[in-house]
Length: 238
Image 1 (tube, rainbow, N blue to C red):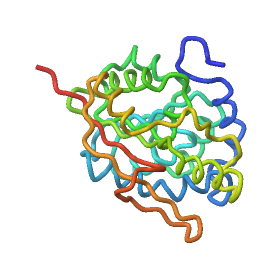
Image 2 (image 1 turned 60 degrees about the vertical axis):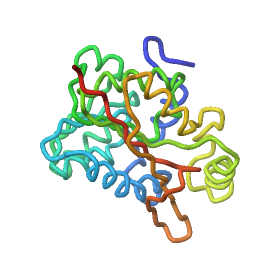
Image 3 (image 1 turned 45 degrees about the vertical axis):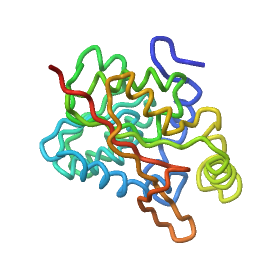
Image 4 (image 1 turned 90 degrees about the horizontal axis):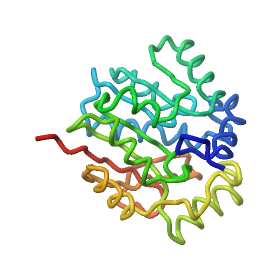
């Protein structure tokens, strides 16, 4: 069920909110995110000027990427619709002595206040959880200044991703909670590129994000068939 006035699924928000108190347990349900985060942060920092940049992380969860980008010198705002996640993010940032702005707000509502207000917008592992990912991309594009960058991470939709990211990760290896992903909601890179063009974004790069559960390691690759990262750029005006 979608949340009235927002591009969000109430059941999806509730699913993650119920796990918020365990977000910073690097050996718990969010362990894969803890292992993926350094690679995601490095991908962003190597492709956009981050020091001094105004950065927005949409669907920030408990603040993993927000904290990494703050340490890299950005002025970071993180938003999420899960109250527990925002509370956990605020508490952890305070414990670390990090100045991060966290808001319990929908991206659509933030757009009404801060259109074009950010140099960089990130949205990691969220696009496949919203009712209308194409419209969400339009909203995210509106939050980026002309010439600014957007970074998306999501899951491809094909047989390989179904077997590895859902069957293996959720039901065989128990890396993430069962039911985390729904195959029909996964997004092919060609879809993301098409939606981006419609929102005034150009796709600059796509890279695979490979996670090895046996070695607990993660790296970028040229194979985006399962997890992938995308760098998009908003067109400049005039």
